[in-house]
Structures are given as structure tokens and as C-alpha cells.
Image (cartoon, rainbow, N blue to C red; front, side, top):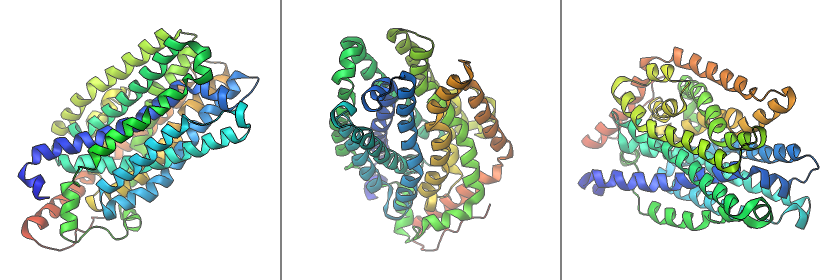
Length: 420
């Protein structure tokens, strides 16, 4: 903590680089899997019907998301008890290691039914670690940023997520362009997953040098970290509910636009790989470009009206959702609260978005039918934003301010949450 006080700007930069480097790997994995779903389906879920193989591949993709809440329930409380840094290191090892291992799996042709079973197990490990990553890293970055800069700072987590997907797309589609579909099906699909190994080692080296967030260290110094964050988090039921519904639209649009879009354009619209790559990258980079501006705007003028106005614009909407949920929950249980409230809608409305979209098109014969799913999630999130009150943010700020004042005075009194 002394180092942070001595050179806070340097500590913030180091924290930002360490946190986002690992976050990049998580989203690189999801990007690679989404872009290579066709090859994975044919390698592990053999069927005479290519659509059935693709559905099975997306089902495995969705399953990893339904494991995320379990990872959140395990790692979220851990981060609130022992710290953000140690938890971030643990989930990074699990994510990069399992992603690399996926590239070594034997296919259905080699070991039969055991191949898809192993694939599903690895996807479950990835989902478990990803569920622990999001609450921890959002808390870590928002606490380093502090009030007044959380929108701008946390938006870079979304920028990193988009860039991770883009990187996955560059690698996957670039290799498809160079090798062709036949070699990609034979062995080329493995290379993008194996690349996660060295990437993880670099990020691990950076994260090992980090200090924990100043707000968490403040609570730790005062002896006021939560002993039972999973039990205490339910004192914030209103905040948990608001985060859940606000993230619903965030989840669906993220995976519809940046994961399913590639498969949709190549398999449904019959675009060639070059055109598909161009359109997905333009959409992704456009979203990443506007996110910092959205974050800065909400730091100055507020979250609620901005989110309501731009709900149909992915890049701007996603720029401030992380800051919003971090400000709705106090430091004591922030990682646990985000893990609980974020991972469930991501599992239900995000990870299943490609599966639901593919199913809707198959059942209706209407290539625009995924639009209905997106509209439904948008309505849910808008309702949550309508009922969001200024007081929902004030309670969190008061708790965080109290923790900082305790450290300055050396006091050891508890920071008690206000009931919503």
C-alpha cells in the first residue's frame, strides 16, 4: 500500500495493464471458439446434418456460460475475503491452461464419444474460471479508479473484451484464409487455442507484480473485510436485481454482434470468409472506439439517462454497464455481488444467444428472427433503468468513502451497508 501512495499513477497503470492482459485471454478464447464453431462441430459432434453439428458446438459454448455462476459463487467471495490480486492470478491459470489444453484434444474420429465429453469438461473449466474473473477484475479496476473515473476506467475492460474477440477472429479467420477449409478441419483449428499458453505466461508474469486495490487494502487494514460475503451480499437485493436486468441487454447484444455474427454471415448469408471478417471487425472496432467516450461522458453527466438513450447502440451502452454495477455495490462484497448478478444473465441471455439464434432461424425459416430475442432483452434492461434511482448509487459511494476515511484516521469501525 505504501508503494501505491508513493506513486499512485504508476500503480494504476500497472494495475490496468495486469488486469486487462489476462482479460484479453478470456475473450480471445470466446472469440476463437465462436469463429471456429463450424470446425469444432464437425470434429467433435459428428452428424450427417451440418446444422446439427453446429447446434451441438454452440450448445457446448452455451454450457460453459451456465457454469459461470458457479465460478462466480466460488471466486467472488474468495476475492472479497483474501483479495482481488490472488484471485485474478488463480482464474488466469485456469483459463489459459484449459484453453491451451483444448487445442490438444483428440477428435471424435480418434476416441469416439469421449471426445465431445472432454470438450464439454474443458469448456466447463473455462466457464468456471471466467465466472470468477468478471466480478474480481471489475472490482479491481473500479477500486483503483475511484469515484469520478469509474466509467472511463472500467470501459477499458469492455474495450479489451472486444479486442480479445477481434484478436481471436484475426487468428481464426486469418488461418482459414491461409490454410483453407480442409486443412483447418484437419489440424489448423488447434493452433489458435494452443496460442493461449504463451499468452497466459506473459500475463501471469505481469499479474504477479501487482498490488491489491487501494479500497480493498483499506478494508483489510481496518480489519473490516467481509467474513461471509456470500451471506452479506443478500442485504443488497435491490442492487443485485438492478445489475441482473441491466446486464441482460449487455449480454445478448454482445454475443449476437461479436460472436454469432461471423457464423450467421458465413452460414446463413453465404458471405465469403474475407467479407465476413471485414464486417465483424468493422463492427467490433467501431464499438471499441466509442466506449472510452461513453465512459467519460457518464463520469461527468451520469449513467442512467445515458444508458437509456443509447440502449440500441452496443458500443455506447456497454461502455458504462461495468461502472454502473460497481457503483451499485459496496467494496466489502463488490466482487461477490457482481459475480452473482452478472454471471446469471450472461449465461441465460449471452452464452445461449448463438444457440437461440440458430434455433430460431431453423424453426421459423426467417433469417431475421434473432432480432426478436434482442428486442426482448432490450425491453427487460430498459425497465430496470427506468426504476434505477440516484439513491442506489449514493449508498455505495458513502460506504466507499467511509472505508477511505477509516484508513486515514486509523479507525477500525465496520462499514455497514445501507439496506435498499
